[in-house]
Image (cartoon, rainbow, N blue to C red; front, side, top):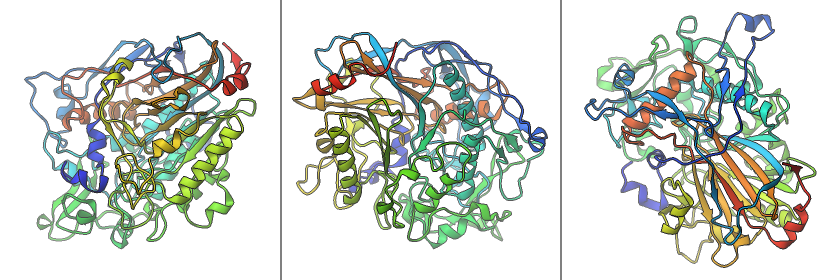
Length: 609
């Protein structure tokens, strides 16, 4: 889709999300950590590979992973030039010193930073893992594989990171465990897009990696499973069982490649033995139901993971075929995009069973795919997490990668906010899609005064009940609604595959302001997760200390290769300049001004620091 197309009906394309990912900032230290992963005790797992992480685990406060600049004389390489990624340093990175923490008091004017007095809550976020079945015949690999260097590329269609998505998650989980040993988490939350293409096997791999099960990271014929590192069955480490984790639903969890409501053709393609034949057009709806090009699959016998069985249909006297696999079936149907996906979270060995979806109000379920819930992580701490499904619902809408709230979900959200306000609880909204954020990465609080350009990612009326991209009197401002609740301190999300922080500043009352914080993807560079420490300060303001962490990959592992591929892809697609050498982390201490009533409520709360 071109830039002109992206402006229609308030659309924001996935290419936009990738394009706005350049930037960097600062962070806070947790201290040097070490962690080792032992072998499984089961006889089955003892015959399989394990992928332990590095023994040294650092946050970006202590050291950063920095891309090595590509020489200006290096050739411009294409997505399919996999052998050239390392030759010309497109995938190279080094280690640099850590970033100092930056204090942002943007929404608490006049409040001098005071010492952190007590820790109220500690948690982590992961998001946009995009576990991918690289051998599925139902994916649009050729769209990107056939591209040339530059911003016309669409890495969401293909990137060599798809080879090792489960391995990157496993490395992130082991790193989370290591950080937890040093500074315990109260819980973790995943902010959506667990799957890449709403397939059953993709979601099972995702849950099973976190549960610490034996993973067979291939499908169909399982080509290369005995010889290729990213294809070998392996024992996942599993999240520390003392950490409860919760889940948010995303667009890729429900829609074909996150952008198209499943129809008869796409539903059949998941479990077919024939590689998907589709068009190459501007709009997903036009391209998917057209024909002319076979989209291909990854060659699991190739260490580099080249795309095969792709190209114009005229090159194939007979359609290219693969071994079909029923485990590739879509979790969506012609009439439903949520319930089957949600149901899988009840088949798990980690806690809580259901991973939040057990808390959905039974009166709201009734087969509709309602996936909103709330919880209090710590009984003695007045902080409430409101998990909001803000994805598009139903067929026939203009953009399935956009945000949307119907009246049912908006009413539920307002009810939860009012209940939290009336109960004197601070509140955090966790959603997949951000709603009113800086278009590019703002790296310093002093830049806020320059009023950087924003982007609203929600569909306009009549598709969504709320939006901040229109002045129409027929639609409500979501920001205006949220700023009726002074106890709302933060909105957290993923979706754009970038780290950024946007202050939502109320024009007259600082207690009605809050922070919008995004976490980058574990799929694309910088492949980081984020930690949050909510602290009470000595003057009874709140500080939200956010820190990015790179998975501590080992020297030789599929996750290490994936990191290099992610860096190369960001350069080939012009998501980052070839001379970029920044970590793309943005970490800070975000100060929140509270009402006098809430200051009194939290005055003695938390674990003293």
